[in-house]
Length: 92
Image (cartoon, helix red, strand yellow):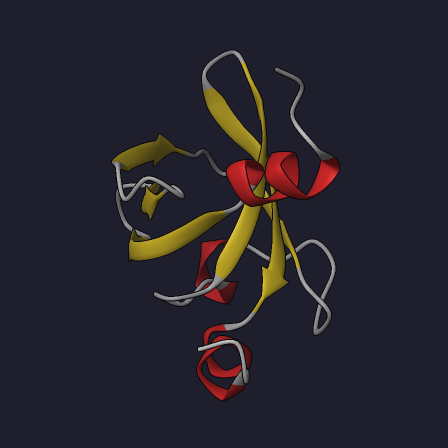
C-alpha cells in the first residue's frame, strides 16, 4: 500500500518534548507517541520563521519540527510550527 503525501508529512513531523542545551540533546515524540533522543552538536542549526541559523536555544517543548540528519546526528532542525501556534489551532 502506498503512502500519501499527507501521511508522509505526518510521519516525518516530530514534537519537541524537552531540550538539554548543555548536553546537545533534544527529546522528541513521533506520530505514534514513541520518544527518541536526538544527538546534536555545535554545528546543528535551527531554522524558524523568526531566525535562520539559530541553535538549540530556539527550540521550545511542544514545537513541531522536521530533522535532517547525517552520521547519526541532527545537522538541521526546521521548526514547522511553534507550540503557541499549535495551542491556538482550531484542529485541537
